[in-house]
Amino acid sequence: MNAQFPFNAPDPQNVQVLEAYKVRAAATKAATEDFNGWLERIDALEGLTAEDLTRIHGQLIATGNLKFEISGRSVGLCYKLSDRGRKTLEKARATADSGNNDAGDESAQQAAA
Image 1 (cartoon, rainbow, N blue to C red):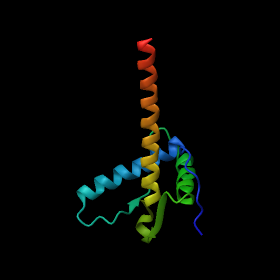
Image 2: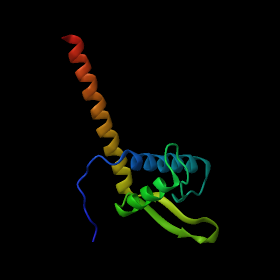
Image 3: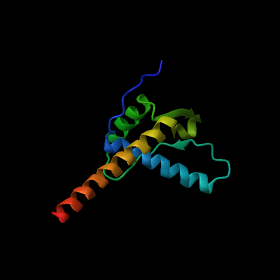
């Protein structure tokens, strides 16, 4: 059974980690002929501690935004954005763009007054 959660703007730190995986996947895909989508764990991101990343990875896996698999002894866990993770990023961007447009509309209205 898949739990369905209504979309609320995700935590900005969760979006930051999803975006980091998306960027890393695009770069790896461009540099590797046989890229299968699986990536080594992101262990460091600006502004986030190791504990933050552990918590965020758990949240992203639990909500279905990030998939994981065990990939041998040398690599350990590998991660991949799920379809839900990509949709979460799209919705987060749309929400952010909407907020930016609203702020711009207010500025234009104030300037016109």
